[in-house]
Image (cartoon, helix red, strand yellow):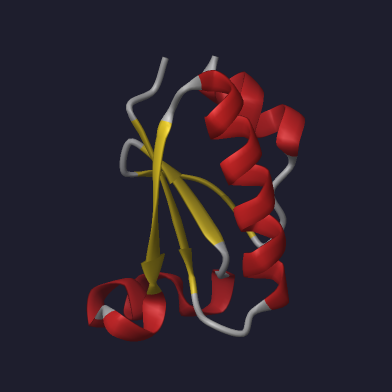
Length: 78
């Protein structure tokens, strides 16, 4: 099982809010740690992911962007 899921987004982003619900649910059910990072507060993340937010990383590697599919995230974390 993976160690850390990172959700990269920004305030006021409805897709980011949707992604947060999915990540929170799946990680909570599977007991996987997760964190959120605000792209507006990190220049490196801003350069790397600005046009893709929300972005989900699993252990530092990009898993998906824009829309988070619950079953795909669950499978990747299993």
